[in-house]
Every structure is written in structure tokens, then in C-alpha cells.
Image 1 (cartoon, rainbow, N blue to C red):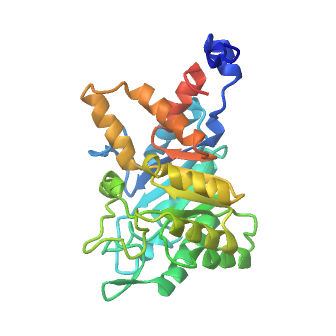
Image 2: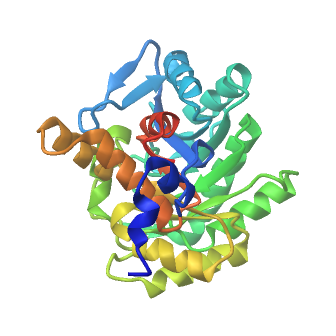
Length: 325
């Protein structure tokens, strides 16, 4: 036989030399939850190993992140006050705003991305302003833009709107530009499906809707062509980075975005994916770290430029020890 593909698999050295997918710590983003109060480090029951932190406890997390070599984070706020319009979302003394100011002062080497949405802040748990029981798209745009601006004024390096309202990228871009933040990037949750994989997150953030569901604004998981429409609109409106959410079950969508658009594409490996791996590992069904490493490489192989994952520190450790990379 002239052609023997196994020749390039005969040693770790040659396998590493011809590896098609490279994984870097620079591409990892760690999402976390910050809550009101003091002295709080509360494990999330449905996400073992993940915690809600009060601001005074964030040093524990950020010291660990620094040691692991993960320097990019995505902040989710869990406020004390909720109302019909989610007013604490854009409060300059809100939980996210205070957390950002703290982190920029005490951990300036970190790149801070903030989630921009209303579901954690509204008393009804939906991602915008209600008109009856329907989320009013255009009324929501104003509060999303105000929220994004308040995050950037507090020091956020990038904003990431996750609400799936039509036109929100244009609304946020306009407000940021008018206030002099022309160089602040927007990472849009461009393709966010109405997914059952979000269950543990809603427990962590207390953001489950009090009635109905989010299918009138998040995407139908039967659809892929619609994803291209959503992403194209975001590109036209000024999104700098596109995102697909959830991760593992939507790699076909990621591939299509990479083929169609020249923008960087992020993939969010969501809470349900994390918790399934944890549960299977705790039951002794799988080797947790081997599955984590294989899954991460799979997502990068499909085309992810950025991976948002609760396993960011573990993946960084796997890269350091050479298990993946």
C-alpha cells in the first residue's frame, strides 16, 4: 500500500505536529453569577462545582481563573430587586455595574463581557417589556440599550445581548456610539434557540418565566435557515462577534455560520451540557475530564473561534498538561 494514514499516528510527536484543530486558552470565556449581599459563595444545586458569588467573594474565583490562565469572563447578575420593567438592569448601582467596577479595579488584567438581557431583572422572568402577556419588541430595545450603556460606563470591555429582540444590535450600537463608545464591541447571541438545555441556568439565575415560555422570541430548534437570517441582520446592524447557543447539539448551525460569514463566531456550551457531563461522571458512567476535553475539541473543530463554558478552567488545565491543544 502506498497510502497509509496510520503513518501520521505512530507517535505523540507526529500526531501533535499534524493536528488539524488547535485549542488555546485565549479562546476560552468563563461565565459566572454574581449576587447581592456579602460573604456569599453558594453552590448551585443543579450545577455542581458552580457558585453564586457576592462581590466580596469574587477574589476566590478570580484568583483561580488567573492561576488557570483564563482571563476572559461573562458576567450574569442576580439582583435583589425585580419589577415589571427590570429597572435594576440599568441602575448605575446595580449588581453587574458594581461587580464590573470592582473587577476593573482589582483585576484589571481580565477582559470583562457582560450579558445584556432582562430575564434576571423582571418580576415575570421574560426577556423584555410586556404588553399583556406578549413581549413588546420595540419597547424592549430602549431598555436593552440603556442597560448596555450602563455596563460600558461601569467599565465593561464588551457587551453581549442575549434577548433575541429584533433590532437590538442596531439600538445598542447607536447608543454606544452616541456616547463615545465607538470601540466597544458587541458579541451578539445571534442564534439562540428556545432550548431545554437552559434549565440549570434558570435555577442559577432565578430567571425562569412565571408564565408561558420564550418561543415567541428565541428560535425554533427545527430551523437552520432562519439562523442565517438572524446572523445576517446582526452583521448588518453592527455585531462584531456572532454567537450560537446552545453548543454541542447545534454544531451544524455553527458550521453554517462559519461558511457564510467572515465574523468571529462564539459557541456557548450551556448549563445543561455542563450538568449532564457532571451527572454522568458522578454516576461513574464516563471519565469527566476526557469527555470535557473531547467535547471542547469537537466544538473548536466545528469552527468555534471562542468557547464560552463553565468548564473553562478544566479545559485550560487539559491544555497545560498537553491532553488537548
